[in-house]
Image (cartoon, one colour):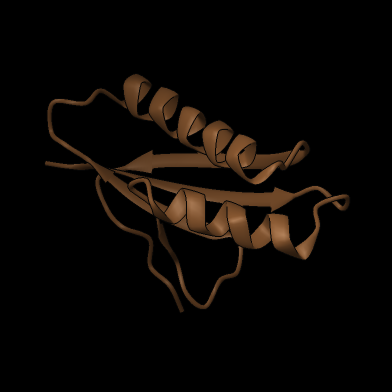
Length: 89
């Protein structure tokens, strides 16, 4: 069964609108899909052979790379892993 990761992220107050848009584009070009209508929440799926530890490591790298590409220097994030996609309501 695929491993699902839920990402909640807040970009720093010093992040411009252009940087926010660039971050969204950069993260979207990786494995991440926005959880709509939530503004700062994303989800991703990882193959069966990816461990939870590796999925967290890859997720952190994806966020760091997207932030770097967008010029975002401050952010806070939380990850949750599990077998199911989030329930949105």
